[in-house]
Image (cartoon, rainbow, N blue to C red):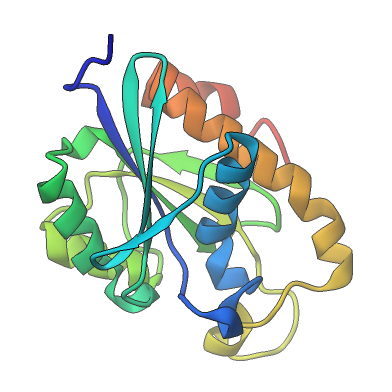
Length: 193
Protein backbone atom coordinates (compact mmCIF):
# COMPACT_ATOMS: atom_id res chain seq x y z
CA UNK A 1 0.00 0.00 0.00
CA UNK A 2 1.22 3.52 -0.86
CA UNK A 3 2.22 5.63 2.12
CA UNK A 4 0.83 9.03 1.22
CA UNK A 5 3.17 10.82 3.61
CA UNK A 6 6.05 9.46 1.55
CA UNK A 7 5.61 11.87 -1.33
CA UNK A 8 8.56 13.24 -3.25
CA UNK A 9 8.94 16.02 -5.81
CA UNK A 10 11.83 15.73 -8.24
CA UNK A 11 12.43 18.91 -10.25
CA UNK A 12 14.59 19.05 -13.35
CA UNK A 13 15.51 22.59 -14.35
CA UNK A 14 15.57 23.73 -17.96
CA UNK A 15 13.93 25.97 -20.53
CA UNK A 16 10.83 24.89 -22.48
CA UNK A 17 10.74 24.82 -26.27
CA UNK A 18 12.62 23.11 -29.09
CA UNK A 19 15.19 25.89 -29.34
CA UNK A 20 16.55 24.94 -25.91
CA UNK A 21 16.39 21.18 -26.32
CA UNK A 22 19.77 19.50 -25.74
CA UNK A 23 21.42 22.62 -24.38
CA UNK A 24 23.69 22.51 -21.35
CA UNK A 25 21.25 24.49 -19.21
CA UNK A 26 18.59 21.81 -19.85
CA UNK A 27 20.39 18.91 -18.18
CA UNK A 28 17.65 18.74 -15.53
CA UNK A 29 15.02 18.16 -18.22
CA UNK A 30 17.29 15.61 -19.93
CA UNK A 31 17.76 13.54 -16.76
CA UNK A 32 14.00 13.47 -16.10
CA UNK A 33 13.34 12.52 -19.74
CA UNK A 34 15.81 9.65 -19.40
CA UNK A 35 14.08 8.58 -16.18
CA UNK A 36 10.69 8.61 -17.90
CA UNK A 37 12.05 6.46 -20.76
CA UNK A 38 13.57 3.89 -18.42
CA UNK A 39 10.40 3.69 -16.31
CA UNK A 40 7.85 3.98 -19.15
CA UNK A 41 5.88 7.05 -18.19
CA UNK A 42 5.26 10.36 -19.91
CA UNK A 43 4.83 13.99 -18.91
CA UNK A 44 1.61 15.96 -19.24
CA UNK A 45 1.24 19.70 -19.59
CA UNK A 46 -0.19 21.21 -16.42
CA UNK A 47 -0.05 24.50 -14.56
CA UNK A 48 3.45 26.02 -14.70
CA UNK A 49 5.08 22.85 -15.98
CA UNK A 50 5.16 19.36 -17.39
CA UNK A 51 4.38 16.86 -14.66
CA UNK A 52 4.25 13.13 -14.08
CA UNK A 53 3.80 10.69 -11.23
CA UNK A 54 5.30 7.30 -10.42
CA UNK A 55 4.46 4.86 -7.64
CA UNK A 56 7.74 3.36 -6.44
CA UNK A 57 8.44 1.12 -3.43
CA UNK A 58 5.28 2.28 -1.61
CA UNK A 59 6.15 5.92 -2.25
CA UNK A 60 4.75 8.49 -4.67
CA UNK A 61 7.22 10.41 -6.80
CA UNK A 62 6.06 13.52 -8.65
CA UNK A 63 8.30 14.80 -11.43
CA UNK A 64 8.29 18.41 -12.57
CA UNK A 65 9.82 20.21 -15.53
CA UNK A 66 8.93 23.88 -14.94
CA UNK A 67 7.60 25.75 -17.97
CA UNK A 68 8.35 29.15 -16.43
CA UNK A 69 11.82 29.37 -18.01
CA UNK A 70 14.78 28.62 -15.83
CA UNK A 71 15.11 32.06 -14.22
CA UNK A 72 11.59 31.79 -12.76
CA UNK A 73 11.63 28.12 -11.76
CA UNK A 74 10.74 28.96 -8.17
CA UNK A 75 7.19 29.94 -9.06
CA UNK A 76 6.52 26.47 -10.46
CA UNK A 77 8.34 24.67 -7.63
CA UNK A 78 6.42 26.58 -4.96
CA UNK A 79 3.07 25.94 -6.68
CA UNK A 80 3.61 22.16 -6.93
CA UNK A 81 5.07 21.82 -3.43
CA UNK A 82 1.92 23.42 -2.03
CA UNK A 83 -0.50 21.65 -4.37
CA UNK A 84 0.90 18.18 -3.65
CA UNK A 85 1.79 18.96 -0.01
CA UNK A 86 5.40 17.94 -0.38
CA UNK A 87 7.70 18.42 2.60
CA UNK A 88 10.85 20.45 1.97
CA UNK A 89 13.08 17.48 2.82
CA UNK A 90 11.32 15.45 0.10
CA UNK A 91 12.22 17.68 -2.83
CA UNK A 92 15.26 17.33 -5.09
CA UNK A 93 16.24 19.96 -7.65
CA UNK A 94 18.46 18.95 -10.58
CA UNK A 95 20.51 21.65 -12.29
CA UNK A 96 23.65 22.31 -14.30
CA UNK A 97 26.79 23.69 -12.64
CA UNK A 98 29.49 25.57 -14.56
CA UNK A 99 32.02 25.14 -11.75
CA UNK A 100 31.93 21.33 -11.69
CA UNK A 101 33.93 19.31 -14.21
CA UNK A 102 31.89 17.93 -17.09
CA UNK A 103 29.96 14.81 -16.11
CA UNK A 104 30.49 15.09 -12.35
CA UNK A 105 27.50 14.94 -10.03
CA UNK A 106 27.39 16.68 -6.67
CA UNK A 107 24.51 16.11 -4.25
CA UNK A 108 24.00 18.55 -1.38
CA UNK A 109 21.33 18.96 1.29
CA UNK A 110 21.44 22.77 1.07
CA UNK A 111 23.67 25.57 -0.13
CA UNK A 112 24.04 28.70 -2.20
CA UNK A 113 22.87 29.21 -5.74
CA UNK A 114 26.40 29.25 -7.22
CA UNK A 115 25.32 31.97 -9.62
CA UNK A 116 22.54 29.77 -11.03
CA UNK A 117 19.47 31.96 -11.61
CA UNK A 118 17.07 29.02 -11.36
CA UNK A 119 18.33 28.06 -7.90
CA UNK A 120 18.35 31.73 -6.89
CA UNK A 121 14.69 32.07 -7.87
CA UNK A 122 13.68 28.86 -6.07
CA UNK A 123 15.28 30.14 -2.86
CA UNK A 124 13.46 33.47 -3.27
CA UNK A 125 10.06 31.83 -3.87
CA UNK A 126 10.16 29.12 -1.18
CA UNK A 127 12.05 31.30 1.30
CA UNK A 128 14.97 28.98 2.02
CA UNK A 129 18.08 27.39 0.52
CA UNK A 130 17.64 24.30 2.70
CA UNK A 131 16.55 21.89 -0.01
CA UNK A 132 18.42 19.04 -1.69
CA UNK A 133 20.03 19.80 -5.02
CA UNK A 134 21.77 17.53 -7.51
CA UNK A 135 24.19 19.48 -9.66
CA UNK A 136 25.65 18.20 -12.92
CA UNK A 137 29.01 19.57 -14.07
CA UNK A 138 29.13 21.43 -17.37
CA UNK A 139 32.40 23.27 -16.62
CA UNK A 140 33.05 26.07 -19.07
CA UNK A 141 35.77 24.97 -21.42
CA UNK A 142 35.75 27.57 -24.16
CA UNK A 143 35.58 31.34 -24.39
CA UNK A 144 31.97 32.40 -24.43
CA UNK A 145 29.94 34.50 -22.09
CA UNK A 146 28.40 32.32 -19.37
CA UNK A 147 24.89 33.07 -20.66
CA UNK A 148 25.86 31.95 -24.17
CA UNK A 149 27.73 28.90 -22.92
CA UNK A 150 24.90 27.45 -20.81
CA UNK A 151 22.45 27.95 -23.69
CA UNK A 152 24.77 26.30 -26.24
CA UNK A 153 24.25 22.75 -27.49
CA UNK A 154 26.35 19.80 -26.42
CA UNK A 155 29.33 19.00 -28.64
CA UNK A 156 29.34 15.61 -30.38
CA UNK A 157 32.21 14.33 -28.25
CA UNK A 158 30.29 15.30 -25.09
CA UNK A 159 27.11 13.58 -26.25
CA UNK A 160 28.95 10.23 -26.41
CA UNK A 161 29.54 10.41 -22.67
CA UNK A 162 26.22 11.97 -21.77
CA UNK A 163 23.85 8.97 -22.02
CA UNK A 164 25.57 6.94 -19.27
CA UNK A 165 25.58 10.09 -17.13
CA UNK A 166 21.83 10.48 -17.62
CA UNK A 167 21.39 6.88 -16.47
CA UNK A 168 23.52 7.61 -13.42
CA UNK A 169 21.29 10.59 -12.69
CA UNK A 170 18.25 8.31 -12.61
CA UNK A 171 20.02 5.96 -10.18
CA UNK A 172 20.81 8.89 -7.88
CA UNK A 173 17.14 9.96 -7.92
CA UNK A 174 15.97 6.46 -7.00
CA UNK A 175 18.54 6.23 -4.23
CA UNK A 176 17.40 9.61 -2.85
CA UNK A 177 13.82 8.32 -2.71
CA UNK A 178 14.61 4.85 -1.43
CA UNK A 179 17.68 5.30 0.78
CA UNK A 180 17.52 8.94 1.82
CA UNK A 181 19.72 11.93 1.18
CA UNK A 182 22.65 11.14 3.47
CA UNK A 183 23.08 7.57 2.22
CA UNK A 184 22.84 8.76 -1.37
CA UNK A 185 25.45 11.47 -0.79
CA UNK A 186 27.79 8.90 0.75
CA UNK A 187 27.26 6.52 -2.13
CA UNK A 188 27.58 8.89 -5.08
CA UNK A 189 29.41 12.12 -4.21
CA UNK A 190 32.93 12.34 -5.61
CA UNK A 191 33.04 8.64 -6.34
CA UNK A 192 31.97 8.53 -9.96
CA UNK A 193 33.27 10.89 -12.61
